[in-house]
Image 1 (cartoon, helix red, strand yellow):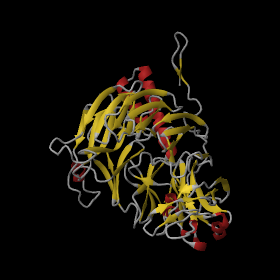
Image 2 (cartoon, helix red, strand yellow):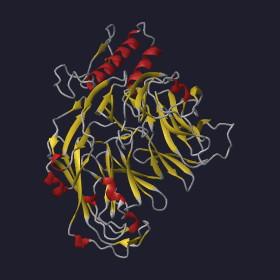
Image 3 (tube, helix red, strand yellow):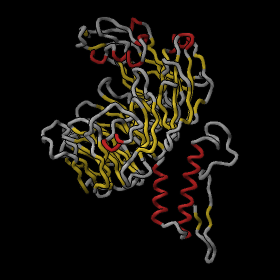
Length: 547
């Protein structure tokens, strides 16, 4: 940082703790030679150089220096891209299966690389060049997580865990930004009986879960499910669920939590929940489709969302239980962009309780909570509350302090981005609006509908927004047309809504070949992921860089 000089003296700059990695940093995944650390060092050097240029008045223009600082800062933010000021073109292509076999095209951003499961195992790609940074060989039955679809807002995770093999050959591999962080560890088959079937977990953990207590604790009451899956009645009593997290590298227990059973509508007690955990051992079938021991989870880098018969709760990576007040099947816990969480009740008027990262309650809001898909973090975080029934859109600070309350023009609201002092939302009808962050007043509107198409194409109109990214000035929208075909790209000035450039979609969807540069001109066919300021397109057959 700069210290003001005494009169007549020169400017003095101090690099305080945290400005740069120590010269004697230890080796290993976070040592000075790792891709993650050089990446941080490059960004630090660029930012210091830009500050010096501004203060000292060197040949680098002030505007250019500030732009460079902004670009470097955006590399580490959700949905952040270094530069979106000009139309995108293909910069590199990598051909290979993404999610081989029947797997989905899930991805993870590990530090400054993109990780995908492929035929060769877990593959990490350098987002600048497309070169393979490293590969972790895996068996055909391997499962790595937490990974998410390429279209999800933030696939970043500090680590991955890969499980492979069966029975006595079941093993786990922990992976970080530079590849494996430890040798494969053989899992004790007896642990599956003691603690439950292994599942990939967040923050370098293996999760195990099982129902506890005697089977006599189960009382299905008047609950009945037909073979067609139609359920009525209430499951009155059931067994609690114990969730255990163990360190993937060492097997040591990190934490264990118990989620108590609560009486629940029979519709929440079907065997489909058991399948989502990945093993029939997690369910006890009483009759037909009724399964009072059924449970499952959706696991991301920052949350384990547990659901099942009589079970509703979410657990953070450090073992803090959230949303215990929610009735099973009538609410949900989700993470917010700034490290906070929101537990939403779906009963009556939707309301959400806001939690800090440590699980402490920090406020409440009205409506379904939404955080921005992309942000430049130049202003305090905004949380939107959507009340579809009341046709209202409300804005809050992350502590629940209300900012404004406006009437919705149409339903299906989504929070695309927060850039500077502009909040950008979209509607189910395809319209995009830029709102003043402080007042909710509309600043600009963009309508992507194609006037050549029928007005009554479908609920979502002729165009709707699938994904959003920003470089801190320009907002990039990935759009899907009602008539099908490839997806389009629209770049808008975030402060005014003016079109910066457009790549129209709607072209024929052909068999994707990552080496075919012409497809970029015809639109995008896969999901987009931001990695270290670069935008990548991911499809089942490959990945390519767009810049």
